[in-house]
Amino acid sequence: MPDSAVPLRRTAAALVAAGALLLGACAQEASDSVATGRGAETTADADGAGGSEGDDRSRDDDSGDDSGEAPDLVAAMEATRASESAEVEMLLDVDSPMGGGTVDMTGDLSRGDHGTATFAAEMGATVFELEMVADGEALWITSDAEEFTDAMPEGATWVEGSVDDLRDDGVWTGLDTTFDVLSVLRGVDGVSETGTTEIGGDEVRLFEGDVDWDAALAASEEADPAERRALEETITLTGDPDLETFTVEVGLDDDDRVRSLDVEVVAGPPEPMEDEPFAGEITLRVRLEIVSLDHEVEFPDGPPADETVPLSEAPEVAELLVGGL
Image (cartoon, helix red, strand yellow):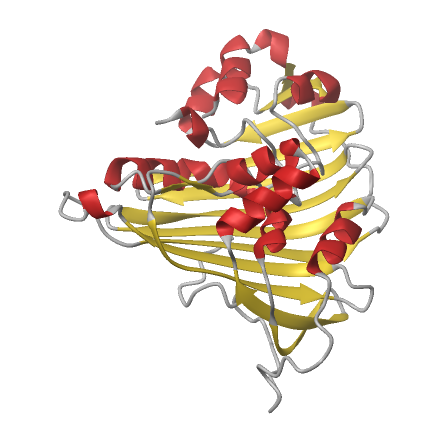
């Protein structure tokens, strides 16, 4: 598996982090067309990126009428990133000629590095879950992945490490990378309002538009080269794929903050590879739903002491977490 496919290396807070496990295995071997890296931390929405099951969206007769004032998506992105906490649900869903998979993540995280994140990955026969709990100083991690459980000392199910040390190792990023995918909004030039929905008890207005990927990368680079790198690690398009569609639907609340983002990329193989085995259309869907922003995140309790060992006593687990399951 390519290095970009490491699921735990970047963050427990972003779905797209674990998502590379799926697309890295599918796309790199199929046509080297599409791969994802980070974030970022649900069940697959088989009908596309139009929302998760039970998403009650109302669309009136004015759907598609863009005669009103267009929202400032960059300002909405920046306002969202300024939040001190977020409760999020994230989904990566991949379909390819070689199969597909999903990564499902939920998190409740604060800038103070306390909160929880859980996610599950599924690709064919590969299925695992992982949970992270942080109290601002200590980070506890457990997983049912076979490599993880086989490397644990007998009787232990959790490992404990320092938040600061695991941040330096790239295992934990807390809230930092949760909103990296929002940079794709820099490439949206013009949207249509499509209706409203409710998220976390708040009314959210929905807008849809097309993404100019090159423009998104260029604008991110101009804002901050680190932002471009983060976006490319979130959604990496390699091998000169034929981008058939690249669309977003974004939901804004009354404070003009992003509360939902649906991204769908449909890519065919580069022309020279059209007749290669397994060459074909690859569809990537990313959904971010922000249930709440700037709320009080509870300090979680750590796991039972008799089920926990320091990472220093589980060196193979430490290597797995730094290098990826």
